[in-house]
Image 1 (tube, rainbow, N blue to C red):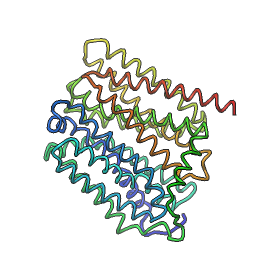
Image 2: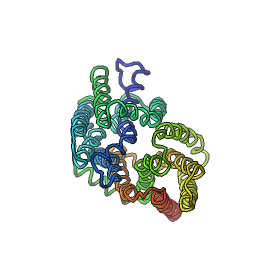
Image 3: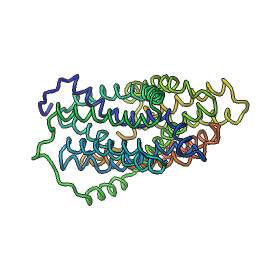
Image 4: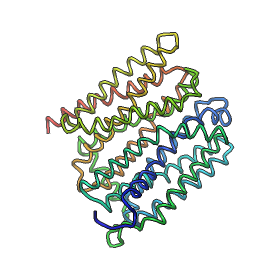
Length: 402
């Protein structure tokens, strides 16, 4: 530990977990609201409501590029508080919006505001703790964080039942307000003024060029983008599949919770296997398995009729996609960071921004192609998995030649 603070370890972990949870809550709590938003704001094409998720991720990716360096210049708390204020203002705009276009714009800027907690909370942990203690705290925080996607759709459905879809935006404001007040009153600024660095945009641009010139970094970012795109694709379309394809919209939050809890074990399994098998091997095998699973889902979806068997196959496939995230994203990030120790903070912001923005962009056309069956989703994700698998094989060859 490098600096003292008045919070107990339990309270500090809880605060960090709540800051991280802003992201998951902002995405997953919206899932049950999409049909109602589509019917009210885009009745001619309800698929457009999916962009409420991807627009948020797009904004968060843009914000991720800047929030880390800005927190190095102005301090951790001002960036988080400023982001929270932007997040809450945009949530209020979303609540009052009478058009889908205005909601989407508000969600983009809400995502930019949410990038503060995503990036800067990790920096705060790094400011106050180091070595194994830091790794331990991050693991505990992430373990708590994995529970949020399981309960967020269920909580969102309760809110919608009492106040309609606009009530979810009110919940966003209250959630963010509680977390930022907690941070403001209980945690002193962790970054001393003498440790701050000036913000230089040319440095960021130069960092992108340096990162892109290293093959393992370049390929890792591309594969991470594809994996993130697969995750965003299933997230944006899953509610519609449950509701329209299988007529299980009412029970969707419960199924989503169960799948999220099962898939949450992927991080534990990855931690156990990675020291034995290596990061590249695990990512390559996981993508190969996903190609097979997506091909199976596509074949089943093209074979009528739609019934309980197809629903069971879809739930299994959804679980593999969530599980895949735990087996790939962390490993790919670590692989890309390995040669970038001299610019770790900037590299983390750049990689997070590229993979998040481009992953969201990949998810949009696949989600909008939804036709009442899982076929477009399975086809799109299968293609992304195949591209990622090919890139991992190319990485192996590039490492052998270097």
